[in-house]
Length: 105
Image: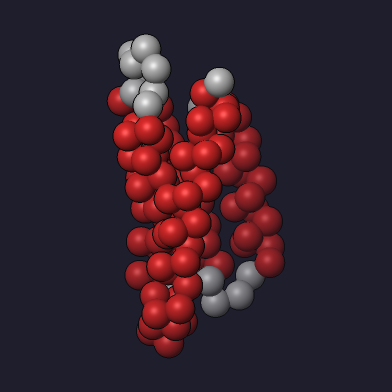
């Protein structure tokens, strides 16, 4: 939790400093991703070994950050959802279980 809070504070501060149309959506997405990770860690804490299904569920939960796109202005939201959301989701579903399985070992 402390590591996540430290990481979140630095990344959100950086995102707010950079600014732009996606500033608030980016910051919200980071908060949602951390919350999803904390929720998943608590739900799977007692598991002897977290298998592929648990790691895929982590990837799915982490993709909750995409919901933050809903607070973008309409033109940016439409563009993001049409062009970027699916590739980001697919990368999450592939990369997250791989990274998590490495960390699990």
